[in-house]
Image (cartoon, rainbow, N blue to C red; front, side):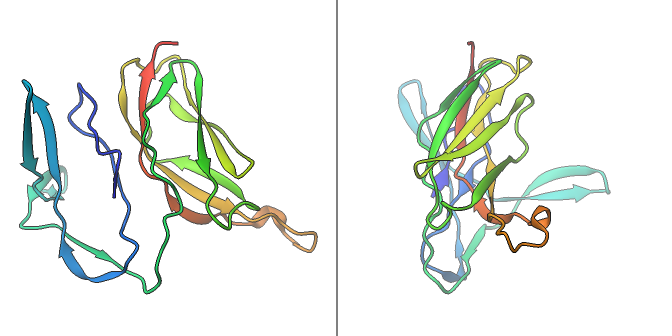
Length: 192
């Protein structure tokens, strides 16, 4: 499933997430993406062209078209997605915060969950993360330097930190356990 697949008006790129099927697919399968837009009241569709990011002469980088994109889903067990898809675009006020509520993944209720944004736009961050009644409460913030009208997707990686027990000799040395990447979080910066 493609998360955050809508490109906001006024932009020509967007970061997205791809959630693999629940079934393992060990052999490579062709991966296709199709874009759709409404232009002058008409629906227009175009197939995406697979490309590889290549370096030329140790400095310049170019996207070079390739014959096909292939996808494998490895693993023997049936998987269940940890995170639910985020449908609504967050309206994040410049100089303010907005709260996003997500279901805590199964088996993670007793753990502290941390989130880290991957390459967020300037001025956008996570103010705090807490749990309340089976939900993960994530407060996103935008500083006053952020530009209203900016829209796109936030990509966040989740980590669990198991609570340290009384017998834990080094509770400060506990390492976070990766919980995967959340589906893309659509956002738009708005005037407060």
